[in-house]
Amino acid sequence: MNDSDTINRAKKGNRFALEEIFKNNHQKIFSVAFKYLHNTEDASDIVQETFLNAFKFLYKFNGKSEFSTWLIRICLNLCWHRKKREVGSGKWEVPLDKEIETEENEVKIQIADDKPQPPEEIEKKQEAEKIRAAVDSLKKKYREIIVLRELEGCSYEEIQKILNISQGTVMSRLHRARKILLKKLTVKQSF
Image 1: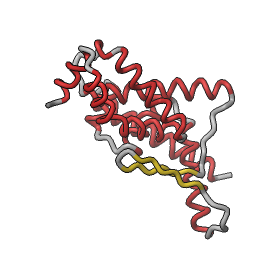
Image 2 (image 1 turned 135 degrees about the vertical axis):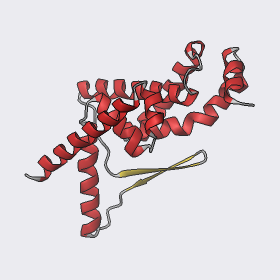
Image 3 (image 1 turned 180 degrees about the vertical axis):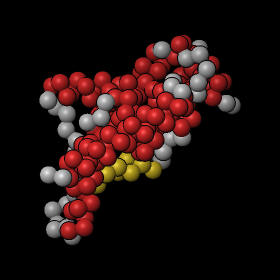
Image 4 (image 1 turned 135 degrees about the horizontal axis):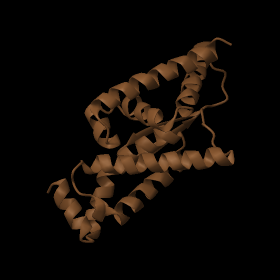
């Protein structure tokens, strides 16, 4: 059975088809949300919101794009709105001591321990913090492109479909985003 059959059954209210859609896509959506928000709890919330919205508006999915790109677009919009809302309320923080690893249906979190760390490890963490903060400070269109290309490893074609923009726009935004990041990181390091 292919995706279009599953989606058609889901549009007709078939509960098993909805479960199959969730099972086949939830890890990818979690990964995108976590890389955007840096928080497992918020990413889990976004996964739920993404699928609730997708199932509510499934009738609007016309099949012109891949279903997964449609889901990622919903996820990115929800992430952006969550971040925007939290920045306005002063709640937005970037947890810097967590790493996530997914295997099958399992999520593991490693929290930094209190043991003294070698200077190289401290430098790596500080550099990662600077990069994360710089990415978090980007405008929506640049942050999305960095998350999709650099963190998720999406191809230009996948990004084009997800963001519904031309491949030339993908390349120019990515170039611009990298340039902005380089400038932000260079300025921060020159102090």
